[in-house]
Length: 392
Image (cartoon, rainbow, N blue to C red; front, side, top):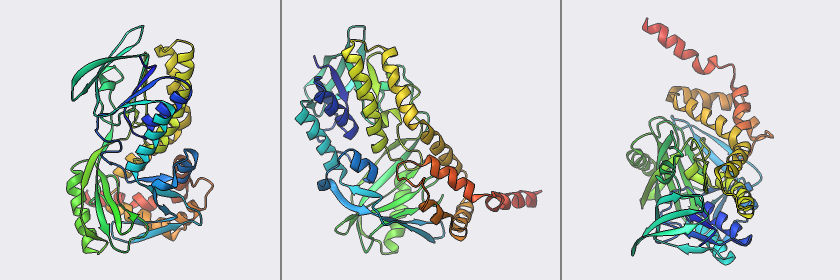
């Protein structure tokens, strides 16, 4: 019987498996897909802080990013650039394999094409029901870690609730022409409530995608058509789609169970990025699990320290990010255009770029400073008052 079963062989699940195995615990990782790293549902943009902290090897890095263009609804753009690399575009398939190989080298066992369907918990352990080509079978373990990504029903079955707010995303592999930096597109017509992107991955290839409250594929094809007409995309490819949580799970622990990563909603509401936050929460999970296992106490009370830990680390940024996301959703394209004009005319974009709050993965402080710079808010919302009065 393994000490821990990890459901999900994404980078977060594999990172947990690796660290626990290095501590001497037996770990079994169950992944529903036949191949690790499939399907890819990520733009592959990862901040420098994450790359350096978790030693992501150069072999999986496709290109570096020191600049990006942010496009307003009218097509005008603000270009932000720094002297130092801020982020890297990585091959997510290859990165997932690297983290799985690290875990295997540390002693973790991997069961591919094996989906965890059900969980039964008692005072002595956990019975994990997993299904593969040979049928369903129960596996005994002391603790279950759910790191299977957003949309798992396991958390609901365990009484941990559901993530109450999420977004849909769609992304296409494309061939590009003379696109050498990340481009971000803001428009409620292009990506309602969110944004679209074109990320060059090198050798004339890239990823084009967007988030939307509804019909992401329809909006994506519309964006692709526009980018083709502009000569930025020369050929279309495979499309993938999936959901991204905007809020966290009501509870991320239970007796002998922890939930980590996208499955827990540990994702930046501003960008939908979850790799770095998932890693940070994985570290906290390992620390709590190691203590619980060594004390032979994997009760709900003991594992509750995990949630206290990750909320202390991420809670502020998640709350501010979610507020900013909901605020942006209510803006019209005219208001977004006004914001772009203010950012440029008042030098706010440059001020934020040079701010001590400018960090790729931490947006709370930067958002608060941006709100302060943007005032007085009548420049943004004054036209709404005039418009409402005109209707009287």
